[in-house]
Image 1 (tube, rainbow, N blue to C red):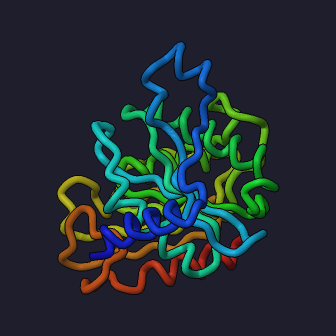
Image 2: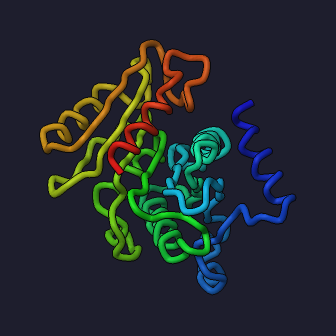
Length: 238
């Protein structure tokens, strides 16, 4: 049901005349490169002037699993008053990173129009989406062709095998995973968190027994409540 809640939310907002999707590339850019046609941001509006988050769905770089892996997260954030965007990116790591950089540049450029506070924003993601959040959190937007804007204050990542980090500095990082995940090893995630700890980066790490890959908000599972912990973590590190 939570999967469809995000769709119902967007449908209701659109019926009320609100803009729910923002293109991040110009018509000229899309004409020159048709692969850009479907990229953009779904906007789950919170309170006017509240900080924003971008949620990045997984999909193994083959597709974008937004309906069940980023819409529910964005909707929950908006219910708490935050402004949340769910990105639709091009499959493939490098194109996804560039699309996220472009999306963040778009949000900063249009912050007044969107009614969002750009200070202390956060990046959220699961699986491949967690790699996006972590990579942009580590190296910044300009590294992937975006504007020279601040890095995120926090990264919230679920079930990913991403192990890289930037020794020159990392944002506060919250991570969670199931110990029965056959795709993303909890030990790999723990090693990365330990490396960030050693750098003095604020971190929080949770391993949930018996859970596999893709538990989303964790509703009805042993991971239920992780989302509240992640929101609190972001707030502490804004």
